Image 1 (spheres, rainbow, N blue to C red):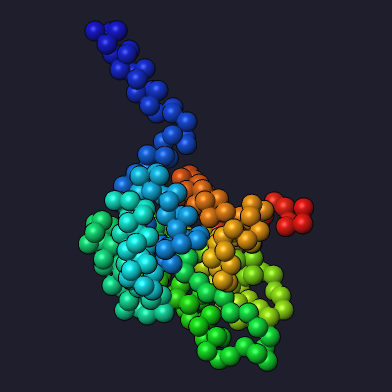
Image 2 (cartoon, rainbow, N blue to C red; image 1 turned 90 degrees about the vertical axis):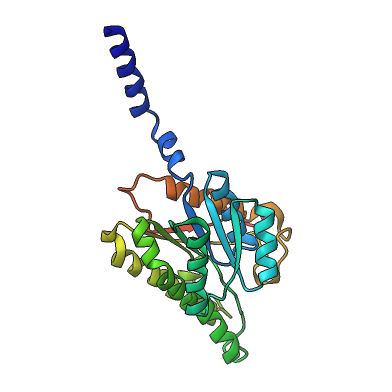
Length: 259
């Protein structure tokens, strides 16, 4: 009898003392994420990373066909939703669709973004409004639509800002304004909800190999940050001990194109 008790004690102790990363790994299994603008590039790369950890993922896109096709390529634990981040009603419907499909919402990843770059003389009102309405107001609306569900699950909100949210450049009036605003918005949001056990982080990437700005992911090849790198970063954030919050993360290529 004493041998049995000792064996059970040793087994329980071994479970309790597993390395922290092993314990955290299992906590992502079955969690649910909503990724805006997830049909390609950064959003798609993050979706792939979350799915490898057993999560369920909903991705949104402005086109129903592209959202459905991207979700199908991600596998059975992904769904595609047509949604416009510039519409609160559209975002609310997306959240409802996620909860109907998966029963909960644990992570909002506000990734959808556009870029219009021109001097102030050449920047049109339409380009300005599209940039601000997508990159800044769109994140506000995504958060408004999902906050009740995120608070219920004591979940995580991650926004994708940019180094353009701290470094300004010529022909960046609209884009800089949207990303400076998004960085500030996210940090203020973090302070609003941290005592509700909701974590908030903004990730500020530099050059990423993606379709953004009309580029091809192959342009510049390997020196740029890859979408899967940001996917790994998101996984690391979600697995981090809940007492610690990296609220603002700058990330850039380790070398330049000319290196």
